[in-house]
Image (cartoon, rainbow, N blue to C red):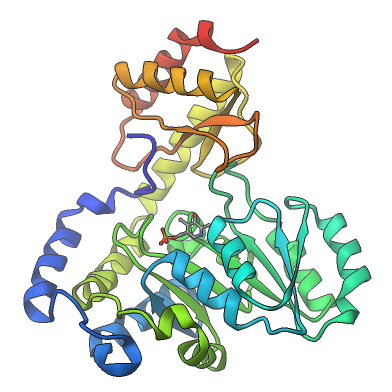
Length: 347
Ligand SMILES: *Cc1c(COP(=O)(O)O)cnc(C)c1O
């Protein structure tokens, strides 16, 4: 399996599985109401405190998914007179949140600090509050946001930095704290999902107590949605413990990714720059991409093809994501399968 976001293999971890079963007996399967009505149990607060500790932030707030978190944050914090600067390759949930909000949205070219600087110089002063929003680790390209530079720009132009750590949480940073912690950057708000490296489902936003209180009362995807399962919240505490202790697994995943990147590049495959666990192989035409994907599947490797509209026309790709549960020989097997398929590659 090279097409999963279960980077640390936690979805099948015996301790996490057991915690979910145990928690469903101790608490309940579902919350049966939204958080502000009767859906908040002590275990939600415990999970939020544990997530804040994991991400080295002050306070966290659970959402039902990362999609809901981004939609809630971006449609509530930026107001009508405000402006949001958004990376061109940001996740669909960020785009949808911006669309639902009333602030002006200015899309800047992917990870382009100079272009963003010019846009801030041109437009910042015409608006009330300003926000810069970015994925930390881009899901389909495998590269990182220039977090240090974005943090400097946000200070210089009095803008709030919002960072979505969906793919970086648990894999990057000290004890899996994420890309911001690794870069020494403290964003105004951080979004993380429990559905990827944490091996569960659901998500959270993390920030200062005052911003979290604002979200609790104004993010409509939080207010008007059933609370996260209490059993899931209890398992989330265990997932955080497992993630923090997973240094060996993190090192292994990153080593596998480096081996894949180097091995594929040396055989002429087009692998964009990156140094994290996501290894895209850009093929180009969608039909050839799917053909190679099927041929890999026949050889025992699940590598899903990624096509438009998830990625731009003509840049269809295979996206490889090694997992901590893989072995060196499996990774060598992947490279051997790609060698077998070089004749399918467009020249
Ligand atoms: C996966 C992802 C999301 C959505 O998170 P879910 O919990 O799956 O809804 C949001 N942002 C980014 C960058 C993602 O990769």
